[in-house]
Each structure stands twice: as C-alpha cells, then as structure tokens.
Amino acid sequence: GEICCDQHANIQVRGDDVVVYGDSVPLGAIGDLVQRFRSVSNHAVEGVQSWTLLPELEQAGRAGLLNGDIVVLHTGDNGIVSRSQLDDTLASLSKAMRVIVAIPYVPRPWQADNAATIQSVAGHYPNVRLMNWSGAARAHPDYLWSDGVHLTPTGESAYTALAPVEGEESRVN
Image (cartoon, rainbow, N blue to C red):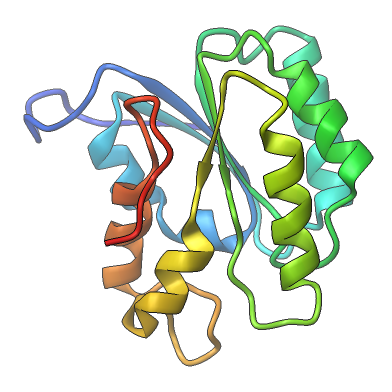
C-alpha cells in the first residue's frame, strides 16, 4: 500500500514518488524513506526471494505501473539473484525515472556472486544507479543488528541517505 507523509512535517521532503521492492532490509527503512520522499509505495516483504520478487517487479514494469517513478530494488539477502531475471526486470523498467539497485550486504556464501551479478547487469541500463549498501554496511557495523543483516535505527537512516536521488551513484563516507 501507499504510505504518504504530511508535506509540512519535514521541509527536506523531495517531490519524488518512490516504489520499494525488496526484502526485510529495505522494509526496515520504510519509515525513514517516507520522511525523505513525497510518497512511498511499499512492496518489500520479509524473507522474499529474488526469484519471486523480480518477476513481480518485471510485471509491474511491463504494465507501465512504474513509469516516471523512482524504483528502489533491494534483493539478494535471502538467496541467489539470477542474472537473466535481473536483466529482464531492469529492461522492463526503462520508463521509470530512476531505478536504484542496492548491492546487498549479507554475511552468507552467495553475497559475492550476487554483488557481481548486480554490478555487471546494472551498467547496461541508463536509468539504473547502484547503491553500495554492501560497502556502507561493511564499513559501519553499527548499521546492523547482531545478525549482521537487519537495520538498526542508525542503519535505517544511513540506508535512506545512501539512496542516490540526484543521478549519481552513492558513495560511502
């Protein structure tokens, strides 16, 4: 569903509409994302696998439901990301204003392969920007709870601040 915020609650709110697809990591940042953007439509679900999430996002993209929006995609925490599925999904989002794809951080055997897949596929689409969540989380252990995956309140704010909205890739300080 769509979560909307009071325009006067925070003068930092941007005039962008954001649609979030992902797992429990971006789900944890929804409250902060709502404060940053005009409206946030949440499609993040705890425990979702990329092989379920990516076809749903691709279908929405092909139907034109995301034209003109900023799409935040964060997948790969719960298992392997398929290169062909990611490619098909990003191709379907050519009319989104911007697609922000997070490089996931998850201390699991599939982390490196997922990061490599995301980085290699993302470069083929002019409206895609990478969000280096992996680098940020690795550099700042306080962003994560003891499970090494889920966001602390500090991590929620950092995750939201890292989303590149000006067209540049995010950088880790």
